[in-house]
Length: 233
Image (cartoon, rainbow, N blue to C red; front, side):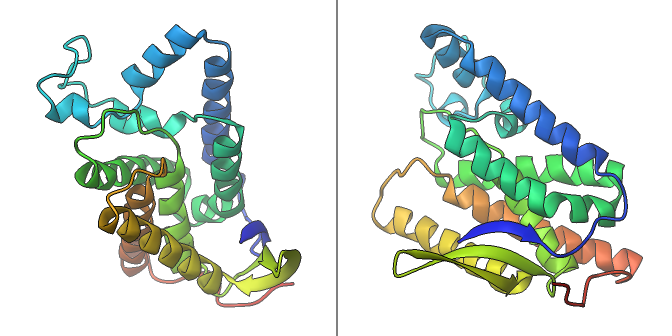
């Protein structure tokens, strides 16, 4: 399923969202201009490498006391498809979540979701000696918050039916819950089969759950005003 757009308008300018998008793009462009050796060092320095903190054999030049990669890795991407899929989902769902939370709180929550998602992935892959990079954990947090704030919004979605791409307006709760279940299934299979697919499934799962929980907490503290219980086409 590929989301195209949602039906909830934003009421404020999404300054933080566009800043986060810009930083991700700038970091990606910077990485494209690095040589192979410099790129490898860049990823191992600022990407999250779990073995850096758990293996005594990891090179000492990468300090295990440097926790910055739990944040910086969320602004790095390994390819065009990787960055496009992450930033597209962030673009679709992020403006409404920032609208609901406000600029400062959205930025703080986004960083918390990034760190939280990385911690969950770290717990399930603590011996991995390759960099984990990508905004997907933080974006999953945005999607979890969107599910809490705007469950009855609609998401225009491309759904492949017998290899034919068809367009449907799906309720946000349908799209997001199905997405989450697919991540959970893939993450569980990766454990059962002891396989490394190159996808941080548990970062997606942890980020989404954390986003939903924090959004629920926000609703309890601030009421449910303008939650989005309506349909728009």
